[in-house]
Image (cartoon, rainbow, N blue to C red; front, side, top):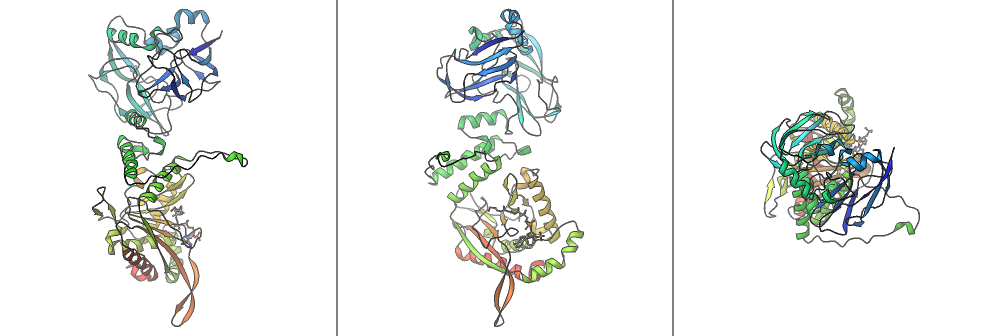
Length: 516
Ligand code: CAO
């Protein structure tokens, strides 16, 4: 038998008109007792309101942005538990809840991995407790990470951690033991008293509402980030989907959030304030479709806007006569294919850039954070912009100066394939000292590439064109490669920019110089 149950906002202390920031379930969803229904957020903290019942959500009575107080109706849930059972033994509706019944004496308990959905053999990437720690119910014990996302496992009890039975790197399944802990009768009792639901008639007495963000998301979330990182991001109002993760599997770390905020602050201090564009309802002009930007596009948009606004760009245009180079390239194409790669103009351009970077080291550098030092790099790591289905990515060919033409061609092919397949790792996109953006395979006569900070310059490459050149008193057809060099004018003077671009052109023009 099923019964329709009303779920209301429990006692939430002195708070009223608290904003709903997340609705975790939809009508038709199956929920277990203790599954989060909604998340509320006050100015100081956020709290999840869990379902007191196992059953099916029939109707949600609120939406994100609504303001609620104690007693506001949240949802109608068709409970699968018999009515008489519910009235008399509400706390026993879930196994979880029954485990949390008030204790009469201290008890040593083993905490196990809960239901992880479809994910099996999930890796532990963080352990948040150690033996001796005194923790609250809902404090995170460990963080798991699947191929796609991460999940925090909270403690169902307050108490003292006795032993930690797992370590980082272990692969676990539902039911595996995580820790043993002493759950104190007194402390549990206190939690029960403090628990806003203890006196609530709408929710069973064991139900918990955490007053801090200890359990940010119930399910595997879209962004890889640990509990501390999520808490910091929430406190600072940072949207984690736009922060680039530098950790394992692009996990967003505390440092990433700090760096992101630092960047925003520096932009603000540099006076890069721009009035926000007005919001326009385009549907007034015709049919529209709204689609979310991919995570990479959002991140790129932030970075490019920051670089465009904070770096005074100058773009120097140049043309390289690549007639001889193109003959050489065609002659060696078969040899390249035999070596498992393909020769496009790009590996030659990378080699020409390295020669220019060695001659003009101020281009192979970054401006120090203090704004008054230049950091000259002794390594030559070349970033290459790659167009992928999810947006622009910039893999880096490390120590390109130590590699042969074929090695560069091969690595370029491998890295761009990984980027296009979405398999590239964060560390393969870090550490560039100079970047190339080639649109030559597509077309164009010139463009103004945006500097890939903290690099100081970027070379844009457009399509080779056959143009008349005046040689030995006559016009002859030559293959000309258009180059567009954008540089940071705070560090690099116009003359240096022109010389650097001319050097690249000269190298490309004389294939012997380039390869020797
Ligand atoms: N002029 C004429 N033809 C060119 C050329 C140029 N400058 N550069 C490349 N080509 C040719 C190649 O030789 C190849 O010809 P074939 O098909 O006959 O072999 C063809 O164009 C396609 O080349 P490619 O794009 O596969 O290879 P690539 O080495 O030139 O570039 C990569 C690799 C990964 C950089 C490229 O695929 C890519 O993603 N480019 C887009 C970069 C981008 O989005 N930039 C904008 C960033 S915003 O500033």
